Length: 86
Image (cartoon, rainbow, N blue to C red; front, top):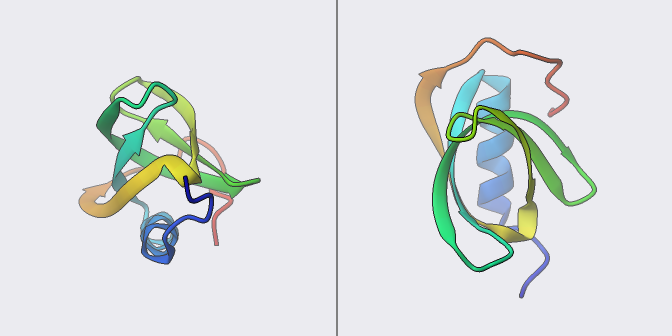
């Protein structure tokens, strides 16, 4: 599997964070299960994306290499923590 995330995925996460909009990600977990998650972006660090997942009602860590797509939604959010994405 390619460990370098798609530039458009990173661009969308960064742009959404700057605009306080959620990101709908298509994610493939370690078991190969693909799901869509609506997330509030907070941090990208060490090839990981940290976002509050509304599906799980908690902060989650996602491997950037396993994010298959990222779409900025029109849903605004009020940050729960400091947003460390610039």
